[in-house]
Length: 299
Image 1 (cartoon, rainbow, N blue to C red):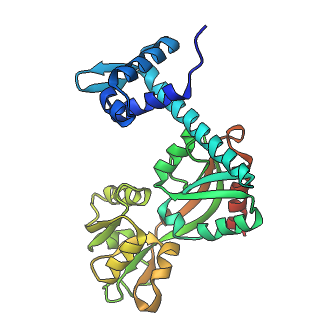
Image 2 (spheres, helix red, strand yellow):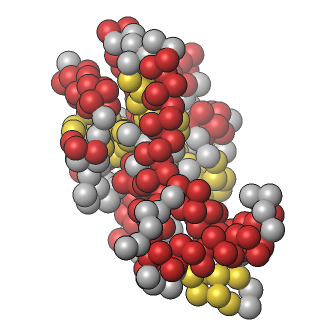
């Protein structure tokens, strides 16, 4: 009868895969490589399959190893959540939720909505972190987070999704920009001017590049930045226009610093969802928060 897998061996297996080498993983875990190698060999013997393919410059997972890696991350994340939640109960907390949100969502209503939830549910602890939409989906799918609030254009296969609002993309411009007095703009018109790229590789950046490619063009991105705040400062300085979520850019448009012109494209409306794993795998406290966020959007 195979032995049950223990969490220490799973954690070490994940470390080896992440480092790509038994020697590097052993150094990080303060173990000698031979001891870690024996752990991995024992894990393979218990599983009855080869998990790692040894190469001259490190290791690669076999198909069985890749499957175990995915499951091991879920198990370890669940154990971490269990320890944290049990510790919270000892401090009077009656549940916890690990929530991830994309940068543009965090720049809008989400912090206020979470604050409202905590006021109504003071015994539940919420931790909130910023992640790109695709990474948030991966972490929720692996069980490393309970909920993600993201744009619905991400790959949501296998996850539950509740609608939680929408926003609209606009063109942010300095007041002196030649397009700043237009009532609305088509995307083609923006391609004739220098622009600021926001969160390279993110969903909005990918959308803009895809739309430009459909027109046989490339965005004339003069500068690339990692957030809406920085993009607004650069636009206000006259260094280019930027396509941004209107709700996130609006706080920066005061005192005439920016003009926000609607983007007249069908794809400029973005819909957001709160995603979780299916109900049996989603804590009740997370389901409460997800329903609260949907109700806030409906309100």
